[in-house]
Image (cartoon, rainbow, N blue to C red; front, top):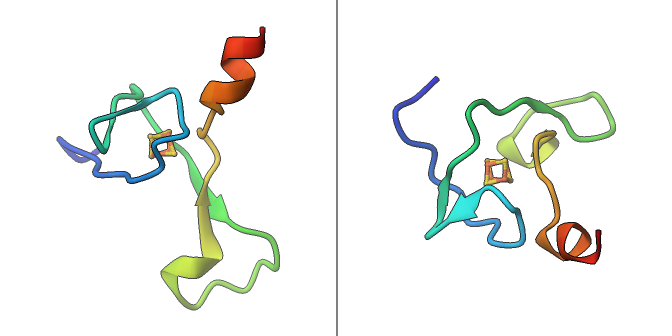
Length: 55
Ligand code: SF4
């Protein structure tokens, strides 16, 4: 795991000042299973701040 994970997904509960504060993250291919650029990947650990606030 890198020392620091920069992430601009500020809608995620783990995001603080554009840094990921999760203990670990999981990244998967994002749908079509044909990954040839970073656009084909997605963070599986993402958790919505909005949904968290509703619970
Ligand atoms: S869990 Fe994923 S989406 Fe959320 S802040 Fe970390 S890297 Fe970004």
